[in-house]
Image (cartoon, rainbow, N blue to C red):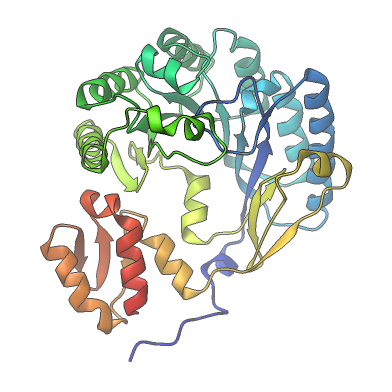
Length: 373
């Protein structure tokens, strides 16, 4: 019989440091596919938000005394902050104990006028950029509703390098309208030419409430088999070029895995501040509602039940290339052997990990594994 699921002994309780996530809920333009919480806004509203965000950072610093080893500023589009990014990062440093080697990431979109933002980010000590490239094809960028061009992306990364940024991640999207291996290869070639330390790749999902959802019947989307082909092709090309496929959607050069995002997958504690931001702290999950007005006037969190039990630990670990030790759960071994024989996983000394093909259908596999535990 396998041991009972542990409800108290959680990995996160053994971690003495904290990850901090700050949400910037603004964009210059809403992309056709995006359902993240964000809005097009004014400069005055951004100033108001930075003031409210800073107040919440200060409030939380009085409650949470763990030192910060990762900061991730996401959105939305944090680069709309411009020089305000310096004040936001400085507030974090003033309020929390930020470790000298902390990973400090800021998301940004490529832009012809990125100088002000990147210069301020460099001055503030930001040491990792996550750049929303999405495609290396101008026609696809136009379809997606992106505001940048391929040339602007190239200039943005070149400027970041000139300012001293040595850890740059690029986002790519797969399964785009009218896409195929030829258009995907063009995007991969362009991304590799920028020599990023990290790449994230996501299959397009048509979400309710987006522009794509409203016109979904007219989109010439690749079918499931074609999407799978694109994903596996990308995995193969990136790994051939020295990027380890360390998580379902993430690839990195050695030593450049996202330290902050890895907290999410390993049940390490993190605090999220801003509308729609989620947290996992002291074994509890909670979040801020997707409500900018409420955050500006009377910010409050919503409890989201306990987290960090054995089921969740296994589920999240299976997203990672390192997999998880399931040797104590003998009832699931025959199924793991079947997955290994079919090329969807690798079982070695009780540790099970998904292959690239397995990651492609990870939701189904993980659900079936959990049912057998």
